[in-house]
Length: 67
Image 1 (cartoon, rainbow, N blue to C red):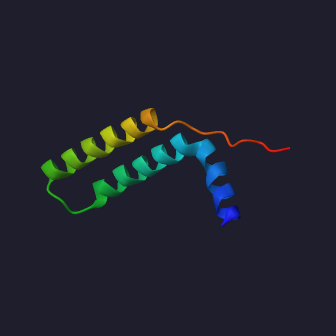
Image 2: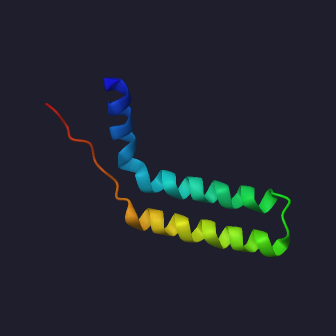
């Protein structure tokens, strides 16, 4: 369990990067889903808004270094 916690702490230093990557992947995937054009447009707008808000809202957390 301690290794999992350390792994999460290390990845929190790159939180904004991962949120942006996931948002980009979802945007690309949504373009390839067989939905009506009007629905696809609104899904992509929603993904863009949620991604931008998430990058703004959640800070990168640098793990504490124990010596």
